[in-house]
Structure formats: C-alpha cells, structure tokens
Image 1 (spheres, rainbow, N blue to C red):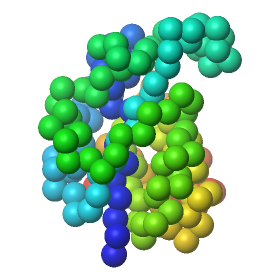
Image 2: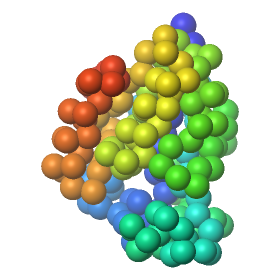
Image 3: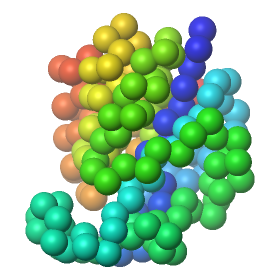
Image 4: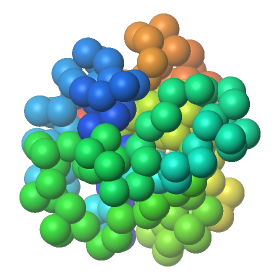
Length: 171
C-alpha cells in the first residue's frame, strides 16, 4: 500500500509569525514525531506569495502580507527543516490548494494531511486530492492540524465528512 503524508504550510508566518497561533505551535511536537515515524512518502506544501500580495484578490480579502517568497516567514519552521531533506517534493502554492499536489497524490492508495490552517489550506488540499484521485483514501489527522481559532478548526473538521475525507487520530 502506497501512503503519502502531506504537511501543509508549516511555515514561520503561520506558526510564530504574523498569522501564527498558539494552537499551531502546540501541534509541532506531535506532528514532528508522527512524520518522523511515518511509513510512506512525505511532501510539504508551502504558501508562496510575491511582493504584490496586497494587490492580489487574496490580499484584498486577507490584508496581512505573509509567506512572501524567500522571506523568513515563508520558510518551513525550524523544527521540521530536517524532514524537508527527506521529502519527495515541496509544493509551492500561490493559493490555498495545490493542483500539482492533487495530480501527484492520485497515484497513492492513502493520503494523510496535517498542518495549518485546517479550514483553509488543509481543507482545500484534501478536496483537491479527492478530486484528482477519486479512489484514493484521503485522511486528515485532526489532532495534528490547527486553524485560526479552535472553533474554526472544529467547523472545518466537521465539513470534511460530507466530502468523504476521513478524520482520524494519529497512531
């Protein structure tokens, strides 16, 4: 069985930076341990914006410049840097979901997602993996995800059921 772990947007700006939360910081030790022991391939997504972010559609709706390519906030958090060396790929994405990831993941039997933000990028990527791989089992590791607030995290987890994304607890 071919398995893939997708670590979504665990970047400085989303963990300790301008859009960081204590919930994102709290998942780091368990997420790292899970990833280090994962029996399959690992990939990362990396939110990637340019200097013109404030003029983009997203920038108009979320007026907080973040994850500007090559900035400190754009970098994968230090705690996961070692894992990036083992990653099959890092998907740079200009929006919430990565079409390239969806295409890549369709060749796996099971795809597990964790990271931030549950209700935005984790959800978007889970749906894209389902769209490109209708027979792929897509699972979100709820305890290894965080969102803007605990309430938005819970709302996002509930939204995944109807789109046939399994919510599982990490082993």
